[in-house]
Image 1: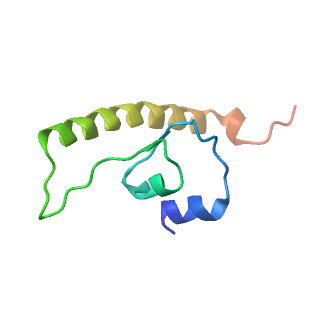
Image 2: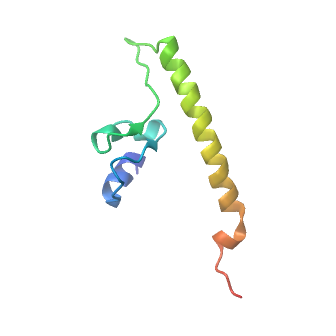
Length: 85
């Protein structure tokens, strides 16, 4: 199922002033949450400008740091498994 469809069906309520950073799978989330940022998308008729490319790079570098933290949390087994002590 598509990422944005899952978000819509989940019914998660996010504070209106919270900023969301999404990947390309969340194109169109701005209709549901005004403070969201997604990468610019190029088409054949409208290629990306140098400014849009730079913004996409900056967004990707921010998302990369977040993805690395999520990876470390998944590897940390105490958070993953049931604690039995």
